[in-house]
Length: 105
Image 1: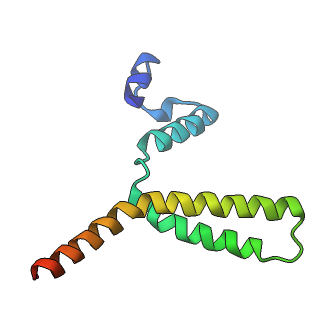
Image 2: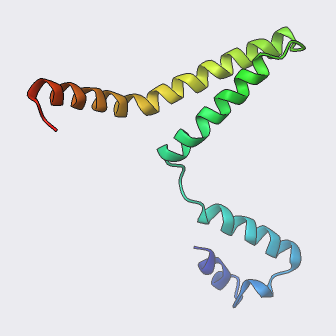
Image 3: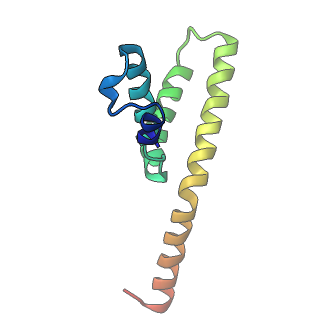
């Protein structure tokens, strides 16, 4: 897509762009080149963010508003985490139960 834009502008490479245009171009290329966030990415990020939110919640100098924010934020993080990890946990529990019940390895 980016190369098509260069062609439409009659340019052969991004080196033909002005410095400000080149900076914008590089931002566009970075955004278009990003991979989608995966469940594994979220599984890695969410526990760290939840710990950070818990640490913020424990600060005594928090205002009432900040305290409420961090409680709500933690609830959201916990809910999202449960939604993401529950299917795998349920599958594993069912497999374990079936293996035990039917003597499978």
